[in-house]
Amino acid sequence: MKAITFSEDGKLFMGTSGVGFDPNVLVYLTTDKTLKQWYSEVISGPISNFAWDTGNSLYYIREKSATLQQQIFKINMVMKGAPYFGRD
Image (tube, rainbow, N blue to C red; front, side):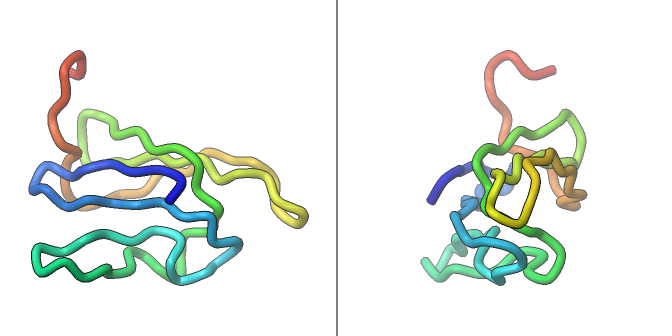
């Protein structure tokens, strides 16, 4: 795992070192302790960092690889991030 974050409802999201459109680039842990893929055919990795905005958007940095440029992406997660000190 390269990056982790929590949603407001307690899901643990993990960004991995999967390259390109690997279906396991962004996964989350369910309450029954299984891993599920999130937007598996849309998100390209490897993911190095996460940041939530004050709404439903999660930003991630895709690391530079041999075939891909480093970029920042915005994902509409249809949920908010977990509250943390310092965010309005």
